[in-house]
Image (tube, rainbow, N blue to C red; front, side):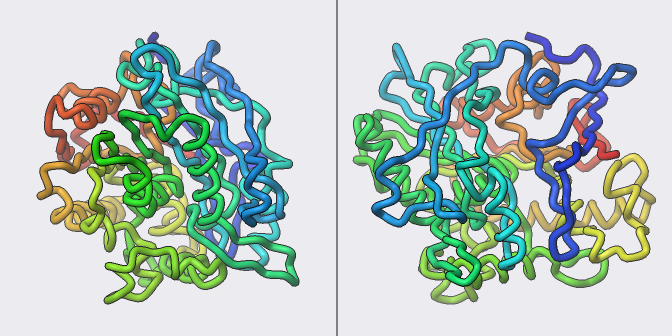
Length: 419
């Protein structure tokens, strides 16, 4: 089961792995190539997913069109579903795909010509690994569940409901969410005795925003919980003193008509953009929620804290790509980011029903990658890998609130390095 003998992760951006939109370096974590030291480059599906990963076909939601639940370009949304069996036949895991946001007409027009904005460009099959794996040795608690990956093609974490007729853009994320849930409920999910809503990155934010809606789909006798992986995006000051991510979120919320789909308990006293930041809503989520995040989230460092737009002279260029090249003052700034993250979850962590796994790594999304979810050398906190921590929390085997000591104390990390 060991995927890598020695882990020195290097992420090499492929040709379309990064682009700059409005001065923000957009990095798609699913389009990174990984390599070992002194080894040749591997295709991601082999290096990260292994050679024998389960491939699951794309199902388009035919009923979505009549509901106006369409991707940015008007095509049908879709999901990948691997049916559960045995003891997991009536258990459901819904994984919300990530992939950033689009906050301007120009960015959304670009996006609708990609798999993040059109099902015409989506892969017909995707590898199910990590929390989606069908192998008990790779995914001990959820391997035989109904596992669904809902594709992300709206650019607003499944929350928008608007359109831009001149640019032929449909912002229908909320409708996609509703249509997908309705389709899955009619396909057997209504009989679930246990369910977990999870997501990575922008999908991790979506799993927070939609957690209570998901809970309300089921009777109270059904065990329903939510997991957010790398979704704790913070409203913080960047290296120039500005607020890069707040500006992005403001564009997303305004352009895509997100306001009406945000939690009322938040928008009653805060502006809509603030209510798109999870730090302002996690304390009011009623269903049990588990937050899995790295304290030094590589996407947030690259695109929120120290994006090229906030660093015109390139002072952060090397540090942004490789934490080992950060100066003492830069590391101090990043430690401040970690402190802000811990402050953001203080109230949340007081609830007995919630779970935490905050490891001091430079990474982003750890639940879908096999090497970080559950493998011989996976990241651990207190000797517990992520898969076991999440499983113990979900099944109430143990209360899981694990917070790592500050960098550089953790030698189990699978840190990302960008070239």
